[in-house]
Length: 166
Image: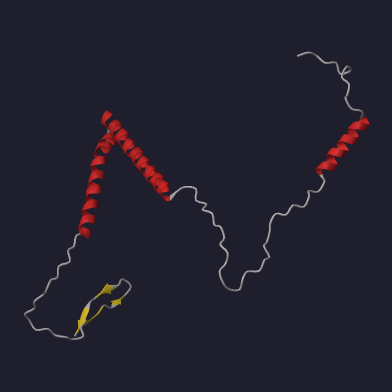
């Protein structure tokens, strides 16, 4: 890098030219912006009755519904694959070392399968139609009385005594 002598450097503008240029730049910066309308209101009166002219309503959807559904399904499948892969990696890591954690990693998939089987079984049982009408055939006499049960609780440590009032 060559050395420049400060005495050899001469300014390209005189002091008066620099003051004039600075004043022009400042005036340009603080000049108010022209008035540009930013909104428009249609003041035409609407008809009191009758058909109204159609108004264009453009469709602004970016992604179709089927594409959004496919994307959500893809995210779900990807997350499932990541979870299964992590489970397999942890199980393989557990097989490599015989420790308490390795035993837990070996039994964890079995427990998960048992939990899934239990959930499926309870869902099938709740969906199964078990609505069978049962008829009770009584052979003894039936008394239609007002049988009430009172359960008073007394004392600091409450004891409940159920009494059948006939």
